Length: 231
Image (cartoon, rainbow, N blue to C red; front, side, top):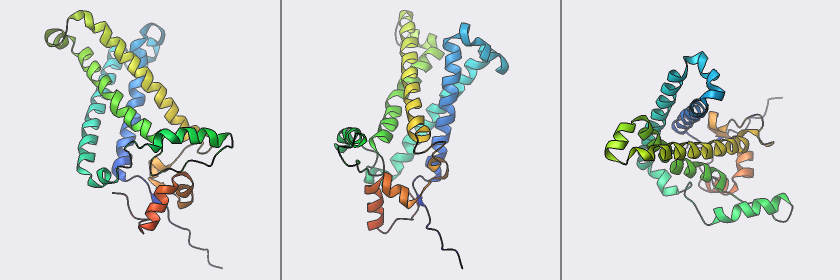
């Protein structure tokens, strides 16, 4: 008997989006790893030895920071030119994003039904907008720490340089906590462990899309675009 043809998967992220995410993920990991060595050279300095010592670690950290800056500029231009993204406003905050965390909490304890999401839940929006808000702070403070003479000559006295270092460090720590939470939600939670492959393949099964993002699934189905490529 011939095998029944399996239903194709839906495209959730296009190739351009996946490449951007991969670059962001790799550079973030490099920044956190090298940043910890720079912040705690007495305790973690031995980790820098295999890659050439403290100076090499600092150079790699700065290179990764430059890569993040280039990626943010590209990302801004990419989505400015992507009319579909602006028209759909899927990533924009909505009033329902305030309600959904409470619904999820009540759902866990059996008091309500599961919240129904569009293409992005509040978790994805927090990750996205958190990056948009906090990374410019890291980039600006990192730039001035890289060129302290420019900062002292044109921005503020040298007494403010330790404050820049503190702001940069605290912002990086907050970003690190956000990254760990993101890794759990996306890869390490029981629903996806050991990995959620959607961000690598861009694909999601219709069954999973209907369960996790029912409003997005129903909209695509009604429009007859269930298996069309994402713009």
